[in-house]
Image (cartoon, rainbow, N blue to C red):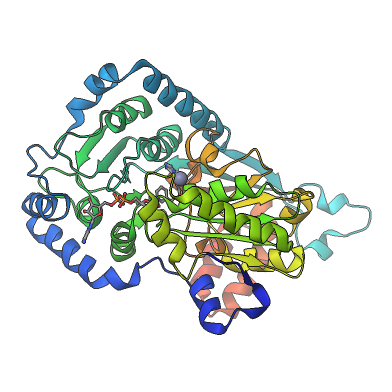
Length: 442
Ligand SMILES: NC(=O)c1ccc[n+]([C@@H]2O[C@H](COP(=O)([O-])OP(=O)(O)OC[C@H]3O[C@@H](n4cnc5c(N)ncnc54)[C@H](O)[C@@H]3O)[C@@H](O)[C@H]2O)c1
Ligand SMILES: N[C@H](CO)Cc1c[nH]c[nH+]1
Ligand SMILES: [Zn+2]
């Protein structure tokens, strides 16, 4: 692998980097057929796709009764690691829980020394507020194709439970013997149901329901290109979190970065999927060369070297030499990575100039893998540049907000003129009349 100069990137290469889709578009029509079959054939389709794509003849689709046994059966050190990670995730997400609130607005304006009530158009009080309530039924997809993802069970279920969701279901790909660690994670996180169904068919089952799988109001969670395409497909019929596809990392590195650390982080995210994308951008030529050397030196030691090579070979991956860290920041902003690692002297100053990233890792001792499992932040994050539009999974994902207002007679009197004037301007005389009706005794 060679590094490339940012200045030399042509339009095709830029498009591949900045408009990447991780193979999702190419499978949209296959996924539409899969989802349609689940919608019309239910459990039969889930069983047939399990056989076709996972090579498993599924007995019970609902495996909820296996979770507690799995929790008791797994090794003590794995159980302790799940519980530690779960605790950190719970703590961080509990800190996000918003409180319902009410406040008085408009109070005291008329007595403002510099303004008259006419200037403000209001002297009455308005009690306004927001309240937050959880959605009732959610489906969490936990991947499990070429690796198992108990960590994604924790990342999806715990925020839902913290938000107060009543029914939290998990779907994960079937296997001759399901990962006991994934099942145990469902138990620790507090999932109400666990189904063995994978890929687009699992997303379809959550969206439309089958004989065994109850339909949900919102489907969340990460997955490969088929899972991601399926979420795009069902969106509209059911709510989704966002598209959280094959993993991505962009590292901003200056000459103080340790090239070995940068390379190790690139290889770690690349091992998820041949469609994963990993990028390093530096303003230092020696660092660019050292990162590429370290990547090459380390690949063969990795168990999933083939997957890593495919991901590194993608047009959405690479090591790039920028003319300055300012140019490197422009690349990072345009890329809008799922994970952004800043391994540079003045990391906070660089971060100040970043708006678009799913989750940021500051310093050489904050590898993305730490956040993947255990810092407590959520690892379900937007990919394919969607960090320009949305953040990652959080307690908010599972809440809806309602606004509340209370007006007394004076409060409405203060708004009367504004409301009736605008209602008349819109030609909605009945709206004005509904306000005037309150003052007919005057
Ligand atoms: N963005 C995020 O927040 C985030 C977080 C964690 C993991 N991930 C990503 O999750 C993914 C996990 O991928 P995975 O493959 O290991 O597991 P997965 O569960 O996402 O996918 C496995 C399923 O893919 C389906 N499938 C496989 N081949 C198919 C085919 N030819 N046609 C139709 N369907 C097919 C099968 O149904 C199978 O059950 C990786 O891409 C990883 O990077 C993303
Ligand atoms: N890096 C993944 C998100 O893209 C999350 C994960 C789970 N396990 C390991 N890593
Ligand atoms: Zn990871």
